[in-house]
Amino acid sequence: MSLAANVRTHKLSPNVTLCASGFNQVAADSPALEAMTDFSRVNVVSIHLSALVDSANARMISRGVRLLMVVGDDEEVVGLITARDVLGEKPLQVSQARGVKRSEVTVADVMTPIASIDTLYLREVMNVTVADILHALKELGRQHILVEDVDPLTGQPRIRGLFSATHIGRLLGVPVLGFDLPRTFAEIEAALAN
Image (cartoon, rainbow, N blue to C red):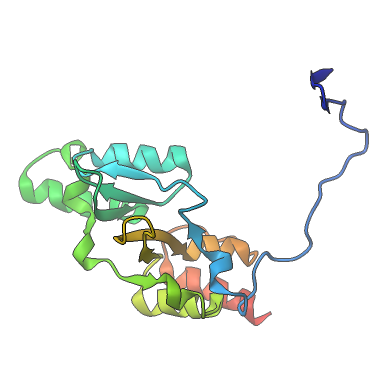
């Protein structure tokens, strides 16, 4: 069947196998940029601060992410929310403290505000390795860390990307699941030692 002048489909060959790279996509000594989710190449997923926590969870699931950037009415970043924030104890604590149903808790109630977010500067990330990023995440006790640079068009600061322990683990060939940070880092470190 012809889809276009230069593109033709064919039936899948019998006895076909999967292509496997046979190696991890990064190593401990790889440049950190190789493990960064770069928002100039990948769309950032955001949510409004007034959205309900359950909506944030649904958005994370549908987009396959564990972190959303939280924006206000003017689309300026006001914080971030993670799957741990949504699925952990925070929504229940807010619900009990305010005397509201858990389903009424908003993103603003449980997000990490911008003033509390640790970031790395892109110019510094360019000179470090994946192992350095993992060490920083472990020291901070965080699953994610944002990367900031300056928009060349406006001269204003912007969030350029992020590092995720889970993503780095996958790139290293480590199947990282769950929210147990010490276990996540132990699994990654064990993989690096091999």
